[in-house]
Image 1 (cartoon, rainbow, N blue to C red):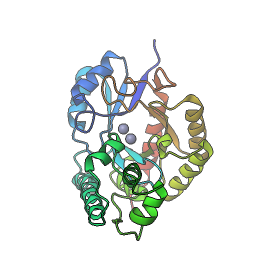
Image 2: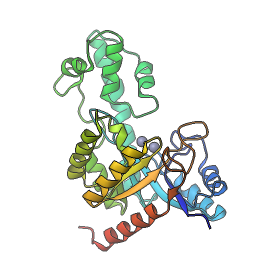
Image 3: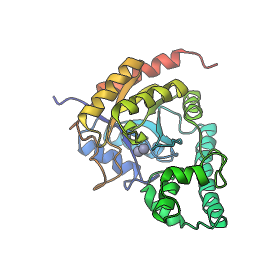
Length: 291
Ligand SMILES: [Zn+2]
Ligand SMILES: [Zn+2]
């Protein structure tokens, strides 16, 4: 019998994926992936349909979400698992995540225009390449226009704290996101550490430690989409050292985009053992009464 396999990071058309939740689960069934987590950006709207499809196609479906935080260097996403999708305070929190960043970006564009440095929102959106728009994208757009010589200059003169086009915190901090996930009974996992965009692996390691100290993750997504084996093993070892579990997911968005469902660049199948370890962590967490 083949080893059981999983995929703990997938998107549906409820965020920026192309499959419906049901079609995603059916694809998992066709590819003999035994368990998948649906982790749309800032929404759990697809979870209910996916859970129903999971019963239909005999695929274990884990309710999940991927929440964007901010990071000055790269992309910081936190995955939440085993959260109750119908929880009302959760709905409110996720809506606030979406509102907060939708509000801020036009404000930056408007202020820069007033200062005599017009940018198109479209330029910034395309620099973000489908990711959540962050200040580094504005800095890059300013550099492309020749308004500044370096991205750092854009931060110093315009975008950094205290500068004229600075607007306070766009989205929630990692610790706010993690504590919300915990309060909703879920587990919090640092997604794709590669995208923190540090210069070297050792710097990423130091950054993971710093973020974990601050936020208190339960796990690290060591095996992600196109992460190479050397890096994935490094993150895996670091997770162990920090007493965290390791997860793996393709970050599947649909056919022809990134990785295939159930696979990463260095794993043809993601072992079910990762999910076993996650479940052990969940039952330990549930044994602790919530303050
Ligand atoms: Zn992500
Ligand atoms: Zn994702």
